[in-house]
Image 1 (cartoon, helix red, strand yellow):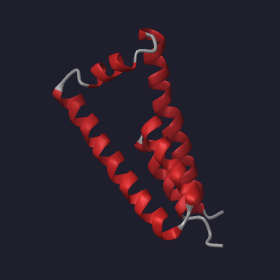
Image 2 (image 1 turned 30 degrees about the horizontal axis):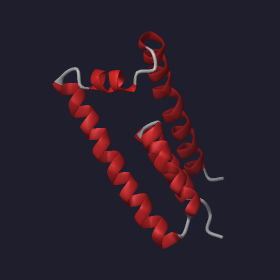
Image 3 (image 1 turned 120 degrees about the horizontal axis):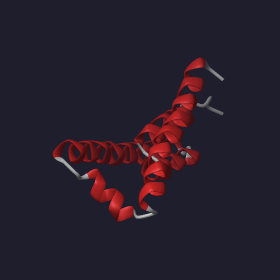
Length: 105
């Protein structure tokens, strides 16, 4: 495995674990209340801007993944879409890059 692929994999793992720590901490303090979390994301203009920034990035990444999978037929790369929306762009993007840079068979 190339150094670049190892970096992508490490970033995907970090992007899964680090944000999830904060989500789990919030759920422990507030209960599993998804709408409460969404409300907390929009507590002020700065956090709303960040939410929309990440949402647009996630949609853009999804369009890119689907477009490339349609051409490259790398079906495994589709796993980056649920990772993006279930965990975040911080996991989905490096995961997709890791899967995309696999040696061609």
